[in-house]
Length: 263
Length: 72
Image (cartoon, rainbow over all chains, first blue to last red; front, side):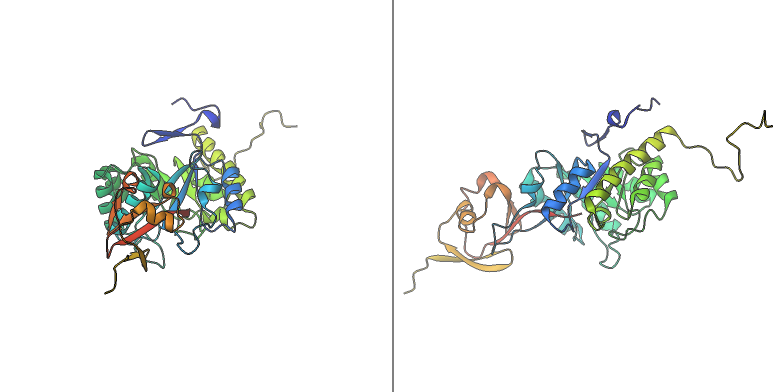
């Protein structure tokens, strides 16, 4: 393959839309909308995830996310966070589509509150219905190559396995299955959830993922804007390292300086 | 005899009353909401934004009015 010579020429495509940034960031947990917007800017992300929630009827003039992060400039990816059944998730995304007109959505159907682990039976069922209704779901899932394949066959436009539980910051727990998912997938694969710091994001990219989605790692950093910059750099570094092709590991040392001509 | 001048409905789970005959667009205006920034579900069915000005609120309607907020 012809590896791109610079990060800027290295684009990726999901459901016919092409992006330069391989970092998708969430918009939850920030101290303020101002800080949120500054972190998105620093991350270089072209896609942000957003949640669909009831408007506050008692105070309709509260500041809005859309006033700080312009949906005309950054692609909003509505999610189904908090949904525990296929029906809840589908209902949420139908509303999201009406609110914003977007078919590109993030599907997540959770199995339990403690781990926020995805319920794959409900996730697969929701994927089938959403695809039949014309949605293009990017799907949060377990790090299981077979489940990933089933989602792709059902019409998922991207496979987004967890690296570790949502909000845990534990880093990628199973590099082997993430790599297997990447190798088997015909659609983009993004690690979604579990990233804690920059090296975790770089690791996901070094495994060959097309991108990384994160929220808490940036929002809960002491300096979220600085961490957003770090994540941008890490995703780019990991991507370049993947394209460059890493050296083989050796069990013992191999000197870097020539042995010939030693005095 | 009590004149029935308002309708009993639910908005986002809470009981409310609105004037008989109002459209969804008028209801949103009464609530102080910008119709371009919300999505409306009525009795579990999406109300297309293009029809806000035509669809009239009926007694017992249950509305969900949503928008985008920060989320991961």
